[in-house]
Length: 467
Ligand SMILES: [Zn+2]
Image (cartoon, rainbow, N blue to C red; front, top):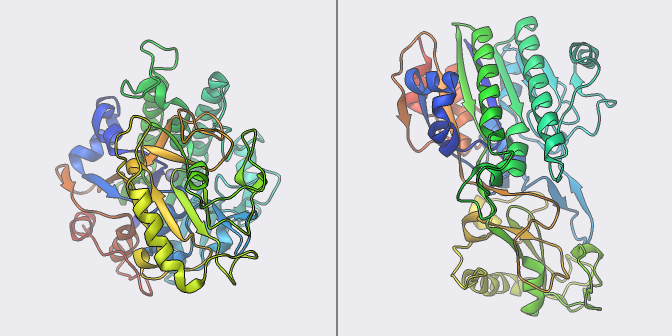
C-alpha cells in the first residue's frame, strides 16, 4: 500500500473545482475518475495548526496550537513562533514508522526544526529561518537537495510587498523547485507514505487575489496581473500530473488543502474598538500607528486587549495570571459573556451588522492546552481580518495593517483522491472534515491513530482506496 498527499496551502474549492478546473487537466482527472469534495477545516482556519490537525486527527485545543504565534503565558508583550517541537501528539508518519512503513515528508508545517523520523526522510517547512540551518532529516539529505537546486532552496517568499513583479518570479521559482525536490525524493527514496506541502498557493492568494477576482473591492479590469493566479495554478497542475505519474499505479494519491481563501473586505481594529469600549486604557493616547505591544498602555486599568491576524485573539487581564491583573478569576466567565454580546452586535463600515463568531477555546474544543487565548473572534465570517495595531483613529481599514494583503482565509479547503486502479466516477464527498484525514489514512494501512482523536474514518474513501 502506497499513499501520497499533495498539500496545497489555502486552496479553496471555488477555484480548484470551479472557475479554474477546465484549465487543470490533472485535477480534472481526479474529479472525474476519483472522489472529491470540500474539506472543512478546523477552528481557527490557520495553516499552523491546520496541517497538524490533518495529520494527528486531533483538534487545536488538544494540540495546544492556535496559530503561528502564541502569547508567552502571562506576558502583555512577548510571544513566540510555534515550531515542530510544540507538536506533542503522534502524527501519521510517527505511527507508520512504528509499524515499519517508511515516510517521506516535505515542508509540512510546523516542520522546523526537522523532526527525527523513526523511519523516513523529512525536509523542513516554510518556517525555516534560512537554508544555512539544518533543514532535513537525515541531516546529510540537505546537501543532496541543495545540489539538486543549484545551491538555493527557498522555503518561502516575502509576500507582503508592493513589488508584485519580483514576487511573481520568486513564487514560480520556489514552487517549481519544491516540485523538483518532490519528484527527486519520490523517485530516489523508498517510501510507503509521501507527503508534500506547498506554501506558494497561500502567498499567491494573499498577494494576487485583488488582481483576478472581479468581486474584490480593489479589482481593476484588465490589470497587468490578472492572469497570474490562473498561470500559477496551471503550472502547478502540470507538476501535479508529473508527480502522479511518478507515484505510479500502486499509489493512492490525494490533493488536499488546509483551508480556503477569499477576498478581504477590510481590517477591523480590535484594539481601537476595545479602547473605545473602555476595555483597553492608554497611559498616553497613541499619536501614530503602532503595535499595541509598543503603545503606552496602562495595564493596571486595562481589562482586555487583542491580537491581529485572520482571526482575533482576545486576552483578559486576570488577577494572579497577568502581572497587573484586574479581573477576579471568578468574574472571568461573566466578563467573557459580556464582551461576547458586544462583539455580536458590531457593525461594519457601512453600518451593516457583521456576522461575527466568538469561540471560547475550552468550551469549543473540550480541552484547550497550551497558551490559549481567552476568546477567538471571526469578524463577519472572516471577511474582515483583525488589525491589532493602534493609533488609526478608526475602527475600519481598507488595507491590512501589516503589509499588502488582499485575501483572508475561509472554512472550506479541498479534498481530491485518485486510485489509478479503480474508476470512482468523480463521486462527491460530503461532510469530510480535516481531522478525518489521519484516521482514514491509517485505515488504508489497516492501522489506527492512537489516543483520543476527534476525526472519524471516511468509509467511502477507504472503500475507494482498497483494491
Ligand atoms: Zn494555510
